[in-house]
Image (cartoon, rainbow, N blue to C red; front, top):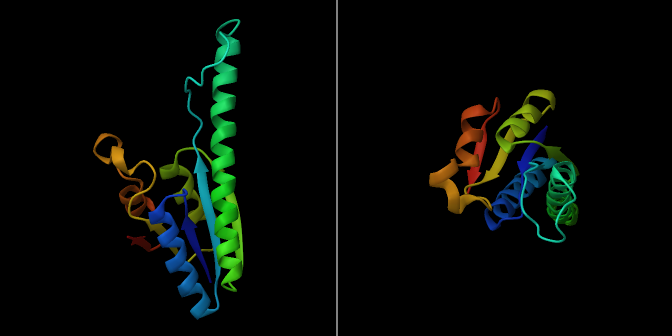
Amino acid sequence: MTFLVAVDGSEASDNALAHATDLAGRLGESLLVVTAVEPAVVDVGGDEPDGFDDAAGRLVAEAVEDAEVDAERALESAREYATEAGVEVETELLYGPPLQVIPNVTERADVEGLFVGHRGLTGKYEGLVGSVAKGLVERSRVPVTVVR
């Protein structure tokens, strides 16, 4: 049996990882830890671009590279935490909107449950854009544990 854990570097996702790791350790099960990078266009400053194509390519690439660094850091931290607890763990970096790509993992991977923090790094915008945790509860094909 494998538990899926979605992390984003927030305190709540760290709590979800801790809970899933504890449960997996007691049951002799493994973890699949994922995080999602959603490419977005942001103004990162710097020199004025030569044209639209230069601007579009540079801004998206820089935003994705920064997000990938943060995502890899969150995954490595999760791997270290679970490994130190004696739990077998795999990690996967996903690309796309979390509410699409994380439920896709529950469909293609043999996981028994999904653990997610109650509020991630975007939680302060919950009223504006919706909650990832709530969306995962609605879209997941496996039981979801939302951890405070």
